[in-house]
Length: 167
Image (cartoon, rainbow, N blue to C red; front, side, top):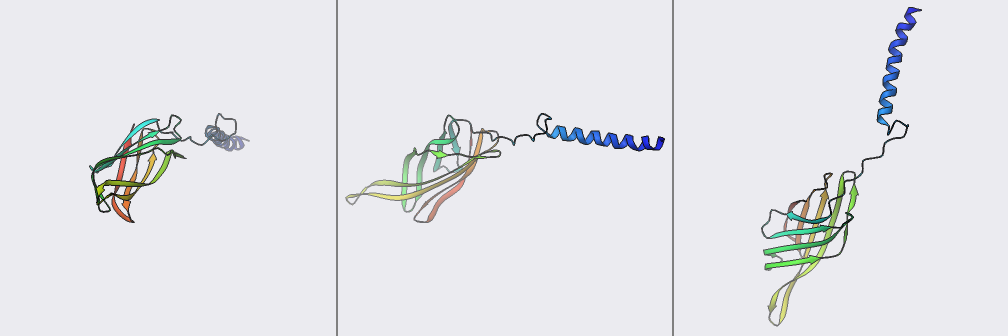
């Protein structure tokens, strides 16, 4: 009879430990699984991107409800692309860009075609189409974003790189 108790005690301890671990893994110990972690939404307001290129930078505004980018402003200085040199200029985009939720943050893609005018030559304005492509991810802190950018013209990449922004 003593042998039965000696074997039963370690089995009982193991059972209690297993049940305790299972309750700890549940949300509130009621047998339901815990909810998946919610995405940290980016902070609303203006974000200033650092591109590492002196010729190009941009800012963007996250909506008050953190579900979209409501404004984007591209700044150029002595930028060359597709045979056009733009001394100094600004392009403002105001089409809302949706933010797509991720398990730990949010992501977005901006794909814009802009007609850029250099000036009046030979009786007409000289212009060219630039394609601006920006991809970004907001991390789980909701205060940092990073990604890639590329500006091209006529299927040729003029400049590209990475960017970062903090809020």
